[in-house]
Image (cartoon, rainbow, N blue to C red):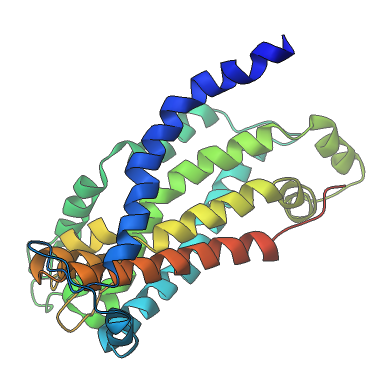
Length: 295
C-alpha cells in the first residue's frame, strides 16, 4: 500500500499542477519578463532595463492609485468583517444559549444572494443607483427643487460609493462563513458562559471572536486581496473610469488602460509586478501580525 501511495497521489495531481503551471505560473514569469521591455502589445519586443520601474516611481497617478487601494484596503475589511460578525452572531445567538433566531437559514440565503450576482451586473445596478442626474434612484428620492447629488462624479464621494458597493456585495458571503464557524463552536462553551452570568457582549468578544480567530484571519486576507482589485466596479461605475485625473483610479485599472488603451504593455506589466508584491506583502504581514499560538 505504501508503495502505491505516491504514484496514486501524483496521478491525481499531475494534470492540475500542469495546468496551473501553464496558465498561472508561466503567465507570472512572462509578466516579470515584459516589465523590463517597452513592448506595445504588438510587434517586436525590445528590453529597456529598469526604465518602466523608474517611470513608475515618478508617476503621480500610480501613487494616487496606490493611495486609493490603501483606502479600500483599510476600510473594506474593517467594515465588511464588522457587519458580517454582528449579523452572524445575531443569527446564531439571537435565540440565546447557542440557538439561532427563527428563520436564520432563510436570512443566510438572503444575505448570500449578492454573491450569486455577477460583479458586472452589480456595477450596472449601482451605477443607476448613484446616477448623477435626476433619474438616479437616490437622486429620485430628493425633491425636484434640490440639485442632484453628483455621487460618482464627485471626487470626494466617488471612491466611497464604490467602497459601499464592495461592502454590500461581500458582506453576505462572510455572514455565511462566520455563521459556519460559530456553528462549529461547542455548545457547552456558551452554556458555561451563560451559567457564569456572562452577557452577550462579553460572550461575543471573549468567546466567539477568539474561537473564530483563524476564520477572521483568512477573511481579512481575502478582503484585502479584493481591495487591491476593484477593477470591474471602477471600470463600469466611475464616470471617468479612473482617469485621466485619477479620481477613482486603482492599480488594476491602470494596468488595463496602459495595456489595452495606451498600447504600453511593458509599462502595464511593471504595474502588475508592483501590484503582485504589494498584495504578497499585505498577505504575509497580515498572517504574521494576526498569528496566534495554538493552545
